[in-house]
Image (cartoon, rainbow, N blue to C red; front, side, top):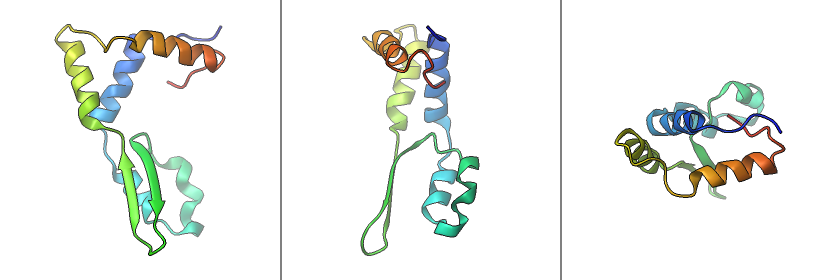
Length: 102
């Protein structure tokens, strides 16, 4: 089996969500189709969903920053991650063949 996801990996990702910037998600929303060649250079880790309506409006949904910060606070104050998180991470790792994203 590949590398196991560890608590420090989860905390690193939670910090990125809790304190990350959404600038690149907004940049993506307003890029022209021909400019999207540089999409691989954007940090879209906070992006949950993006779409354009039929009338041209743009809707951007980001990951829930408050939930991430609550989980981090629980960890810092010694309450740990929510129940079931470790089991979930192991299941994701197994399902992905051991190469879960970090």
